[in-house]
Length: 112
Image (cartoon, rainbow, N blue to C red; front, side, top):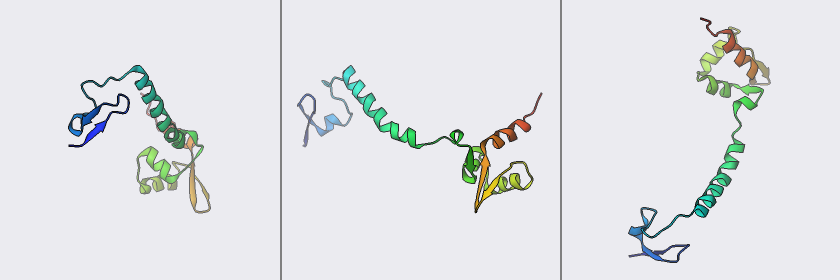
């Protein structure tokens, strides 16, 4: 049976003893938790920085608008053609102003 050495204590454990992640004489200290927190935050920071929210952008592409609104490409085309949602076309790319999307919701809000 393969034995594994515990990093901090140097004790040897069987593989079956280590499957649960904790051993009966293993101790997690506040320092261990603080180190884990720091490592976790360090790993998450690049992910959080790279994921721009749509609210940070003034101009959105069609796929972003469809994702925000949860609609199909056909429905977005309908909103464009009937004038409900203004857009700008630059080359072959269609852009939508974030304020126009918010205004569309405000204009269609039901008042009771």
